[in-house]
Length: 376
Ligand code: SF4
Image 1 (cartoon, helix red, strand yellow):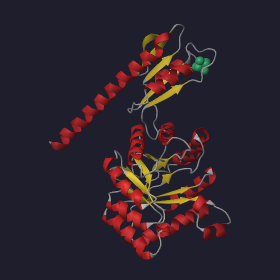
Image 2 (tube, rainbow, N blue to C red):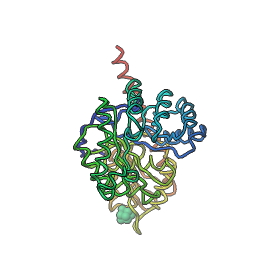
Image 3 (cartoon, rainbow, N blue to C red):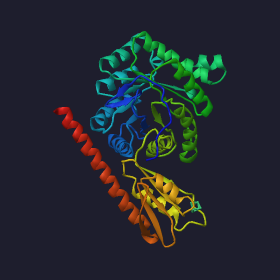
Image 4 (cartoon, rainbow, N blue to C red):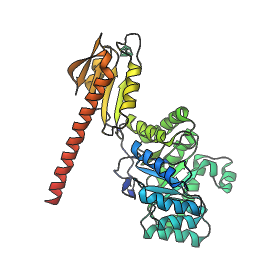
């Protein structure tokens, strides 16, 4: 199977957001954030469920008021994945959601007021084993840093982060991760590179306010791709002015393209040309739509003719090479059988689903075997 990564990851300290490990040898976690009104418990839960179905490992929820904190309590009770509460300035909200069982606090310790308040939040986080995410953003850089550097720069972002880190250090608190986001790719990349060399905490990557679905995905892929390829990054959030479910899908696509994580079908498809023996684009689009629910990782090559077809098909779990009237399906790199070009979508869906079921059964059997060994 394709997707082996050549990347050597930076060795970060592992922390836990609920039952999801972040950093160390853990898979790079994909996260997103709800954009519903948090006080609308049902709408927010609906979106959290959609995000979890798309593969979000953790979900962030904005908690701007005490009313939202009360709603968060109800949301948390029914959420299928760990939740991060996004809090700005008001330390009482942080204490409240901690009481209600939040899995991570996104709060900048330098922004919550006097030492007593900072201590109250940090001590509560320590008592309840709740990690903190420091989130530095170029758009909300401290005024004195803006003055010192003239404009947001990578060094300014790192200095801002360092202030929050110093506070946590003074309290001997190391259960945290950090993000340093800017909408400029080079500024973001450069800031993360500097910080990655200074600390061993996990890093949450993101290009903030990246833009709409298409341009924002490209910008995120370029920025996050540069960092991930260098081994930097333990969790990612793609920020798009679009449905947050898209953020999760794009996040996985970025990780898949670097061989860092696999989930669902990885389609290898040619762009098609006049040599194509069936409509490649239509076939791929139809299969992508039909197979969105698949979680098991699998490479499927859909290639329009024999120019590149056999080569790609041999590398994939299932491959298809276009032929006149009927196309040749490969299984595990070997020629398997021909499929009538009129039946391609239906037949391929059937083949892929049966292979997925087999793979899932194998995994279940293996993990059952491990349980038996563990309990014997
Ligand atoms: S594989 Fe064949 S159909 Fe696809 S782009 Fe290349 S030449 Fe065209």
